[in-house]
Image (tube, rainbow, N blue to C red; front, side):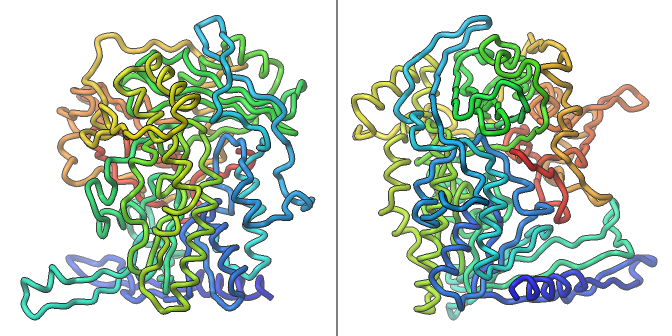
Amino acid sequence: PNRLLKNKRLTMLRSSGRWFLSSRLGIRRGLSSARERMEYDVVIVGAGPAGLSAAIRLKQLSDDVSVCVLEKGSEVGAHIVSGNVFEPRALDELLPEWREDASCPIRTPVAEDRFYYLTESRSVALPTPPVLDNHGNYVTSLSQVARWLGAKAEDLGVEIYPGFAASEVLYDEEEGGASSSDRDRDRVLRVAGVATRDVGRNKDGSPKETFEAGVELRGRQTLFAEGARGSCTEALLAKVGSGGGGGRPVPQTYGLGVKEVWRVADLKPGLVQHTIGWPLDWATYGGSFLYHGSDHVHVGFVVGLDYANPTLSPYKEFQRFKHHPRIAAHLRGGECVGYGARVINEGGYQAVPTKLAVEGACILGCAAGFLNVPKIKGTHTAMKSGILAAEATIDALRRDAPTSDYDERLRSSWVYDELRAVRNYKPSFEPFGLPGGLVYSGLSAYVLKGREPWTFGGEGSGSGKRTDSEATSKTVKDPIAYPKPDGVLSFPLLDNLARAGVDHADQPSHLKVKPEFDGVVTGKTAKSLTDYGGPEQHFCPAGVYEYVDDDDGDPNLVINAQNCVHCKCCAIKTPFEYIDWQVPEGGGGPNYQLT
């Protein structure tokens, strides 16, 4: 019955758009100003672990509450990419009998942890830090876990709409104050839901015959669970966030993770390996993971985006990294069958927004920044935040309260305890580099155990003085020279892009140069190129950005938006943060299956 209802609602959504001809400075197509409107008790943006955990918990608490989940991917899991060593702590709370569920993809327990420091040709075994002790955890594909959670949510009556991208936060304004000067001061913005992006436009923005207008999905409460650097979340924080940096005590910082999935003959199910060191220098934060699942090897590389060298390419660092003997031994003779990339939060406890619950809404999971950086895990904290958000939301609905007590529940939960205990790991690397960071991390892990009375802000971006974009140095004299891929262990970027199943239909570019920077980053005097050497053509893991000479031999910025894997790196690392990353038409982007 739930699926019949969902199909009926989908038909309503799909048939909601219309267009007409109008005359304004000539004849052009226009759109009806009215959008279809659907109402729910709770609207959730994002069908990842946080959003789906919230949806499941909501229906566990009340079968009568109406819950809708919007997902911009073509299906649940299509945009999910992670390592992934799964910590089941939150899942044990949400679905205690998951181990007896034959359909659950979490089935390979970790059998062995390895930790190495790499030089270019050698490796040194190191003691596994306590935060990387994975006893009791599981190697899995988070994309497949999301699909499984989605099915569980639908079985409970949750309506999930994949292929619908939330592009706009809707607000209800309540004004107070007798005078005009009071009115702005006393205006209260209450989140009322979201609107989806129009679909069926040509690249120039004009509507096709298949045009469908966006739909308003209004909820008494809206939960934002878009993942790291979610576009609606960032808009919400900028509008109603409290404190500096759009609601964050210090700017959020990020790392870019690049991952491949390999089919190999010599599988060692449950083997978990992490490395630090080569190919990165001591000043660049990052490392690798290699996990043996029951069917595949998951291998990847993460680079902190606060690196300085504008010619550094996280993708190419990953490709040459695989040729190290310690890594190649696991992959040689195998076949790469999957590829993906995504930014992760690295700001930790210090960068979590000061206020995650506002009138009509709250922010969950990686959208809020709950990744445990040294543990390299955020799924368990994301799921727990979803559980807490659901419980706070149900209570708010029953009391007819505009704002839930989600913040209070979070701060008294193990999520905050865990993040606070590791709050100084990443910032310790900023002033001291790799050697000093390792020394402090060891001291914190084995002696202080997170109880130190101080909290590092970080000398760099973590101090609130600069973002990852501002950490980029001016053009370097000696660009990094990367070896050519051999097509066996390492691959040209476009070859790997095909493994991500990227598809963007003929539509306007969702990657826009912010109007205030149009003359700064384009044309003959583009500062991103002249001052910084065009770092976007190096850091993008999908080959979206390139500079192409025009007929006069002058370089022009070309944005190949059709290649985009939705990693969000360009919105973070471009000089001046000149890219406005907007959601494309729903259903576009990568189609991850094994990541």
